[in-house]
Figure 1 (tube, rainbow, N blue to C red):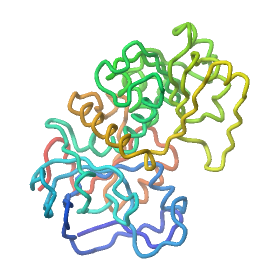
Figure 2 (figure 1 turned 180 degrees about the vertical axis):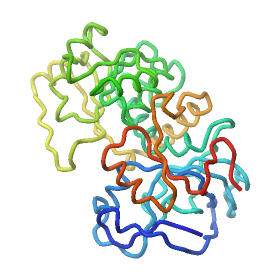
Figure 3 (figure 1 turned 30 degrees about the vertical axis):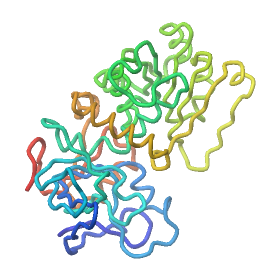
Figure 4 (figure 1 turned 90 degrees about the horizontal axis):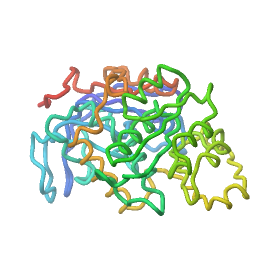
Length: 349
């Protein structure tokens, strides 16, 4: 089988297309023929050296993907060949990612893909949607797991509403019944945030975000999902209601310092929740996977430009270009067609 692999960290030129043996599933494992692999910032950062020190052996990149179960190991009850699945955290704690034709994963990392949902959607939800779910459930006043109506009466502010996590946060919050306000940097991105389901979209280059938020939510928003707290914190604190939460899942650089103004934070009893999806509790991850599956089944996590998440595609042998596209800030979702053809709704195999 064909696989993209690297045995040293660095720029995308370290990625090589190699031939390797098709692996066999062991106890509690399933083998999946990958149709589509999703690329996230965490994938190129790991390859560039942000995760590993010195690599031992060869690694296959990419955490997310979707495809068809090809073989089932002993103890992997509930799966059978031909079953369509989406995958999450595949390369975390492993040398095997989704940028290859077949991958073996523990059964809990393969989740049935609802009938009628595309492999594109399945390959897009892992890191972004699971991160968004934790961000939306970080408040002590909110639910531990999202479902229709779980955020009824809540107003959520999503900064960077045209990004992959921001897009998923808008979709999940709307699905759960919240009113969503999103910030973006321009009109093209504003259109994407509206298509994702944001009721109010603000251009942070042209508008005072806190001032405009308070026109919509007089007491402030219940929760903020923030992609750049270092730049947004002053505005966040003004826009947040008493007892509100700021969920922080990213920064412009890894060693960035966040200076928290104590008195404004104290006066509103603000909760700050930092989020890394890999290290949330097992219960939080199970809740996220379950909720994302339910949202997929309800059609609430659709992808494509018409749903606010444009797709940019590459073939497997151009995985390096796919990584570069994500690193350069391509708007929407970058996908890799591993199966060698566009498979969309229909399973491969």
